[in-house]
Amino acid sequence: MDNSLAFLYAAAMGDIAALEREYSKNRSILSARNPEGRTALHLAAEHARPAVLRLLLNYGMCAAVTDTHGQTPLHIAAQGSSTEAVDVLLREGSGCSARDSDGKTAIAYAYQNPTHDILVRFLDYAPSCGVGCSLTPEIVLGSRPGVGARAKSDSAIPCARASPAPPKRCCGSVRCK
Image 1: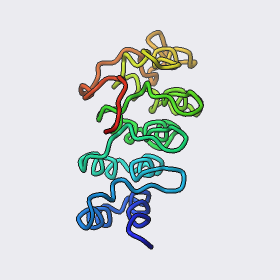
Image 2 (image 1 turned 180 degrees about the vertical axis):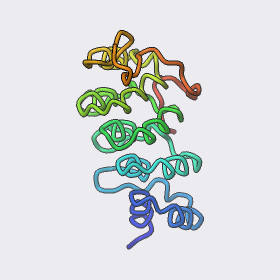
Image 3 (image 1 turned 60 degrees about the vertical axis):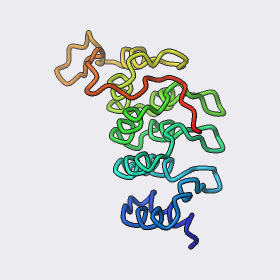
Image 4 (image 1 turned 180 degrees about the horizontal axis):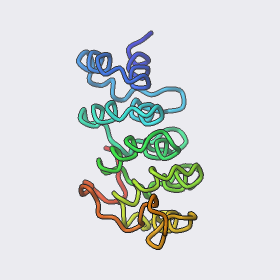
């Protein structure tokens, strides 16, 4: 297996030691892509590897990098990989207003495959995500039965929540160098 494939495989499997080993040998390995144009960051998002996401972002990978379908790692994670993966990407400033080749934003994918906790993450870290997005978190969460500021259920999560930590950027257009 060549080094690029080993690096991508390690990202998908959550093998931190292999990622560190390959990166120490060749720092340009961060640009490795699979046939769909997905980077190690995309694969870590797809396979719910938040520790790998943090490592790759610390290495300098851009959270807004796109694959051949125009999807960012946040698009991938929003489809249901894990709340922690979405959390990491939003915290690191992944632009939620980015649209893929089909014109969809990450929040639109989260809504199509509704995982309540993932939708809440968008509300927590991107309260003004409506700028340029097809759906705002308030609209998505408010339209789900039993969810929202007026929900009567004790288990419902209210729509208006304070952000646990300010994001580096809030939903702006993020571009990779």
